[in-house]
Image (cartoon, rainbow, N blue to C red):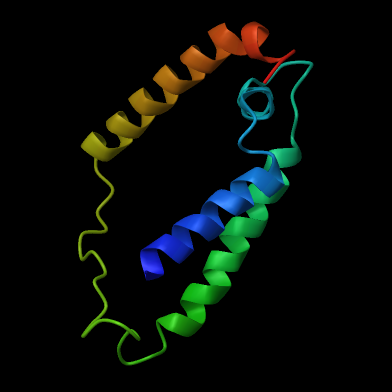
Amino acid sequence: MIAFIVGLLFGLSLVISGMSKRSKVVGFLTINKNWDPSLAFVLAAAVGGNLLTFHFILKKKQPLLAPNFEIPKNNKIDSKLITGAALFGAVKFNKYSKTYNNFRDGD
């Protein structure tokens, strides 16, 4: 039930912020003279909200609905991680750049 409520809240926030519109997302991801920076504010609010929430949650001894926190122990940034992230970003950027003209006028 908790997962359903969280998913519903997440979906509702995507619709309210405009991130469910392809043209809005493509306009943000395509950096040219028509760049739409408005989703950067949505991203900043989401990251800020999570930072604040995690600050208070991680001060607790244990989570509300689990016996312990499951935080990954591996925090190493290596060449495999950087390469994978760069490839993912390049592919996504290329895909959205090529399709920008198709989506900018309609949703």
